[in-house]
Length: 318
Image (cartoon, rainbow, N blue to C red; front, side, top):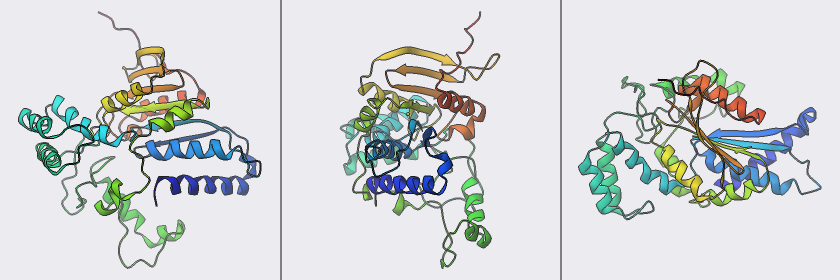
């Protein structure tokens, strides 16, 4: 199981879904997701583009993809995590210097480097890397026990979701397996480890580069091709995303500027338009942009779907 199988399965699902609901065939189709969707979405989009050339299959009218706080270059993002935490005074200078001394780059997986990173992360205390300024869950009865299973969208929220999905009537309604002898959980470290996948590319930049040539919309927020990022997210730091996008060397069409949901609204973030790709940040959001900043997330997705630029923020006044 891995990225390739997921793309194939997702494409098969879409074909069967369109067969069941033929009234939707030919309509504009967009793919939107966050986090590891930085892998899943480009891979599915490429699969759709390739399979659309098969005369035996119904073509899918893919118009654009949008990825929020997506994993594009895992090693780069892991290394940037500690730079992000250091610049915001979550880890000490000594911890940062130890990483600089023992880690020979973002791809360094040596024991001494990992020990330095673990020590630094221990400096941060009880915070969530998915939103470093968000409140954390203090109810020990509902805290997830795995170190990587942190609350992504609010304190203790994972517990409420698990409690809901473990209800027999809910499992029956969603056609889940109701005969399990153990409770369903949302996250376990042993299934989380990306290294277990045999086909998880270390970089998604070749996929994005290929998709730019197809002419679909690409947005990254932080794909028209869009990418967006919350600026409170340390797990996939916006600085790592910016660096990854710069490696694509697409050329700038509209330079960096502030955007806002509408007149009289605060600055919601910043946006830059490249040739074939838009990168937007969302001010005050963590890993889950639409949870932390729903109005800004709605404005961003609305602009993406309409194929319109994000509204400009009012100019600064004295």
